[in-house]
Length: 199
Picture 1 (cartoon, helix red, strand yellow):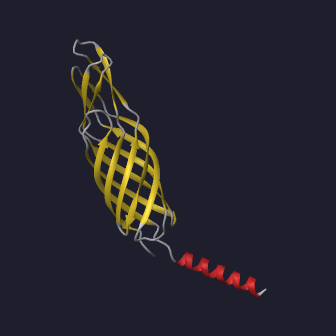
Picture 2 (cartoon, one colour):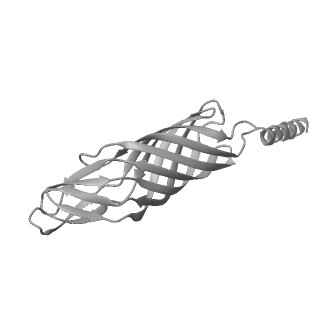
Picture 3 (spheres, one colour):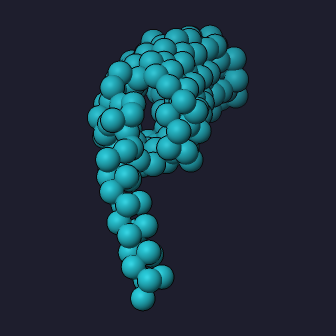
């Protein structure tokens, strides 16, 4: 009976300390970084993201990532086999996210996460052996990511998987031709977390 009493007492104390401890559930991540687009001849650019989050438990947070990425150019071959360059100005995204933190120690928290949502692809133009344009469009895509948080600072690596865009244009002979532009990109990000932290 004494052992049962001792077990119940320790369990109650543990649950009490857990409920009084932990981290503040709401925070906002603000990040900047470098975007590396896919495709031959592509050139990286800058990105900026804001992501409000809510921790449903200490190790799991859900949020909404709003990001803008600016990249330079991708090149490829059209349906006539000619080289064409695609200039893309910017893309934006609204992605629902979920992160799992491998530690509750706020001074060092590795994490991994996934997400899915809407990516807006800016209008693009085609140049090179042929010409053409494509208007702005929206596509559903997803992301996977991993990184660390050290107190209020965040470092992460993300892969944004976005379906390609097919551009209609003309080859150098004036015949209709198509070229595929890859929209997926890798983001290397550093940021600051506002809010969160120990209760």
